Amino acid sequence: MTQFTRRSLGAGVFALGMAPAILRAQGKTVLRIGWTSGDGALDPYATGARLFKQALEKRVGDRVDVQLFPNRAIGDERPLIDGMRLGTVDMGIITNAVIAQIEPAFQVNDMPFLFSSEAQGHRVLDGAVGQALRTRLESRGVLALGFMEGGFRHMINNVRPIAKPEDLRGIKFRVLQSPIYIEMFRSLGGNAVPMAWGETFTAVQQGAVDGLEIPLGIVDQSKYYEVTKFLSLTGHIYSMIGCLISKRSFDRLPADLKTAVTEAAAEATPAQRAANAQATAGFRDSLQKHGMQINEVPDKAAFRRGVLPMYENFRGQIGADIIRDALAAVQ
Image (tube, rainbow, N blue to C red; front, side):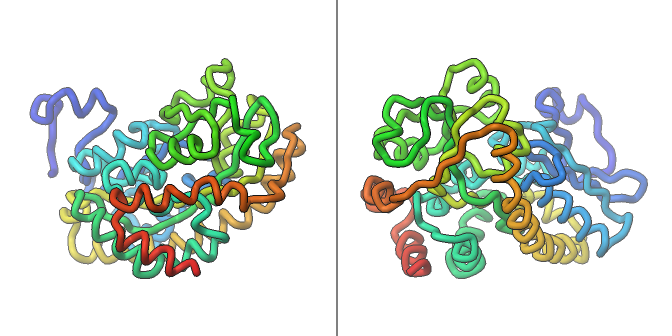
């Protein structure tokens, strides 16, 4: 599409802050990539977007202009992924649980205590399970270019440290709008409050919720140490974040740019994982310096026992084959 007008496209697209995907200006293909967290140097979402941009522009020079939109500038995560399906958004760095809202098989990545390490998560996502997820997502109109990471998720709140499941009782935790997250807290005796990311900081600040669960990098880079006191290193879910592109946008690219985009994401994904691992090593010290009280969780087995029934309960939603293969891959 070389020319467009507000009238020909309709006001709704522009009201959402979205323009048609794959703009072309002065001979360049423009790819707009959005995410909802900040653009800090160590933010895992921002790091992924920047590394993809660098890798692609290294390959094709100024034929492509990758434009970066942090801080929900072109939408929250669900509008971003819906826009990708429609072809009104090119790309996004999107949290796994939101991807799972359009392809439930991705819920497998959020199953509590499935992965014991980042390396284990990489092996599963880079193997047959990851390929099966890519195939299912493509049928929804979105391509997964790479499975990047936010790191393991931990619990932060203003009531008490979490060391055992009983400590969750009576605490209101903001969670992603995901059945997995809601059921996890219910299984452990906590109180889950589903909420969009854009509302969360203010909700914690004003006491509408007591806390939330997110990776250390987002606690630090989004300055949640300003509004929460306790950080408990539960490591309950490995946070995969997807580098995604609209299938419609991808299909409109020339063949050589399709190859370049695919190769750029393949280069950026392990680089983003490595950068996040290096940054995570310093986040704990940073958060402690900002006054957060940090505690280890001595007995994660008690948490695992509490969520074990979820693996059977979600088998139908996720797919018995995906659950089976994921469990086999982590043995």
